Image (cartoon, rainbow, N blue to C red; front, side):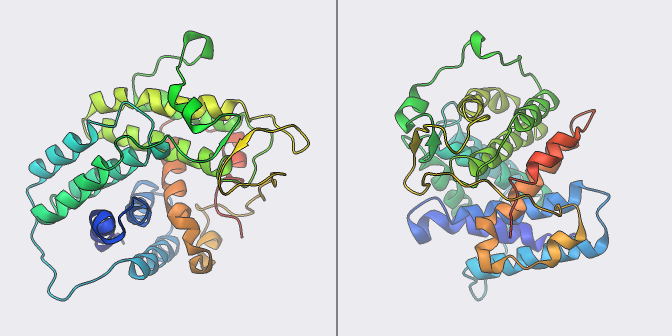
Length: 318
């Protein structure tokens, strides 16, 4: 059974993020709530026990984050007006890479949830979402990189020599993303590596969602920023611990540690029987990485085992 209340929670978290915290990161949990819903909705072979476990964990996460008020406004702002406002906010940042794509991730998650609910929130709550998205203007591409500094990533260009095939639809983008994932010989547990790979999945998934919703020009404009992430990651697909590594990060440290292989996957009930609260649901990634990866899988004609094998090193491991 699908519970749309988790979509409302996700939107409320995204909407209140900037006003409550002054930054952009609490919205991570809102996007994760929305991701949990669509993970359950779009993967039709999941059993009822698994989906109930996913919902319970997502609801526990949202209850841990959201500030619920007595007599909350149940108004549903006009869907068309909400969509126009969010796209207008995104228009100013879609062409460049900002915080590994979270401007696009938050916008796409919000638009998906509002479409599913056929409208949501007050004018003030929609303004909270647009203020958050607009706050990405003039921000850095990200803070943790292997082989590059943030300024080098910002100046990076994509040329014919990079060998990226032309992308015109979500199926082509998903295939490219999964093939890039398949190239890694070793995946390291680091914000600059496994986490950046995860955001390659989620950023590209957000672009696909914009396309699905009919916003094809935003899909096309967002390709250059996500290709930058792929280009950066290509330089680290064969690195070894003993190599001389240029690491630019306030949180990662050398030597990099190999990621552990997840024995069970999010498509298996056992994965969700484990409680992830102690690890803060991997900042919500336990839901968002799952949603994005399986969404990419359903868009390609042939699912290779190496896609799934390498994802085992990206998803939550404990």
